[in-house]
Amino acid sequence: MAVTSGKEGKSSSMDQGKYVRYTAEQVEALERLYHDCPKPSSIRRQQLIRECPILSNIEPKQIKVWFQNRRCREKQRKEASRLQAVNRKLSAMNKLLMEENDRLQKQVSQLVYENGYFRQQLQNASIATTDTSCESVVTSVKHQQQNHLTPRDPPRDASPAGLLSIAEETLTEFLSKAKGNAVEWIQMPGMKPGPDAIGIVTISHGCTGVAARACSLVGIDPTKVAEILKDRTSWLRDCRSVDVLTAFSTGNGGTIELLYMQMYAPTTLASARDFWTLRYTSVLEDGSLVVCERSLSGTQGGPSMPAVQQFVRAEMQPSGYLIRPCEGGGSLIHIVDHMDLEPWSVPEVLRPLYESSTVLAQKVTMSALRHLRQIAQEVSSDVVLGWGRQPAALRTFSQRLCKGFNEAVNGFTDDGWSLMGNDGMEDVTILINSSPSKLFGQQFASSDGLPALGGGILCAKASMLLQV
Image (cartoon, rainbow, N blue to C red):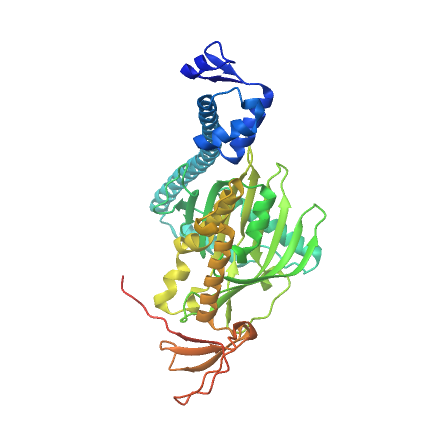
């Protein structure tokens, strides 16, 4: 290794020229110290010379120059690695934008074709004024209505073969949405793609229910991405529980699961939601990993789940995750969330929360991307916050805070909450939780007519509308 010594080399017995050449043993000793202390003080450098006889003929200033050069090379290496990562991300984002541009061009072509078709129909309608043409139009409308009322698919049984048929249909519909074909997607207000953006986020326009779609690049292996996203309780703060009631493998290497999921209500003025769904995990021919999901209903002929008290059964339209391996590592992920949250069951003032695709994108779709991005940052570098706090520990603590708040707002009896009194839905409700996990081991005496409490958590809750 050669290190510039400058003027210091003139006084060194081992340096007769402009450069000092270190032996392999000297470099090894310096590297060991660098890993322990990248920026040693002058006292530490002198101590190193005394402790290592092989460095005894090198001046402290020459060692100082070596460490400066070593730190410079390390900085250049990290910068080159960062630029390579940014380049990979920009290439992936460029690929996503090209796909989105192709989709929009196809959509424009379709709209131009439909516009010309409707113009032609209007011209034909203005020309055709005879009774015969009117009868033809009425007959055509009746025929279309009959086709619309006819079930598109015959009922299927609840056997593995029947569930696989539902799963394959779900996969087809989900992929159509993920590629931007089945639903008309528009750019989410305020979201601009870029190297530092969370991804490309779009919302539905004019479809049944609410839907959101996102595309992003994450620095995690596709299998790990699927594992993280399947665990909804770890990243979706409104998710109370996800129970896998049945699971079996399919002949094509996939997995079918029957899930029962419960979601917290965001306010005391509405009931919580639950979902009875089928989840299908499979690998496509191009190596992409797909996790798609949809609600099971009686019209599909699948197994049914009885209604649960305190919950309103919502419907999940074909949704899921398309995860493609990315060149250079990481995954290119497409997320589709499409739900019908039954807004008819909540007060009219709250319906915008249940009818807004933007709210769904912010609460569910973007939460998944943020969680993946946070995990990727923790994996790529050993992030430690102030006072030695680990991000994973803070994330767990945050989840516990959200879960505790949601439990108190919803007040489910199986969480240990019991009603002490209230004056109606819109007034203050008082509950107590005396479950073993909530006990403090203290005794509270009654002084105002209320029964004595043997310990626990007392909660007073109310909901109100604020003008903002």
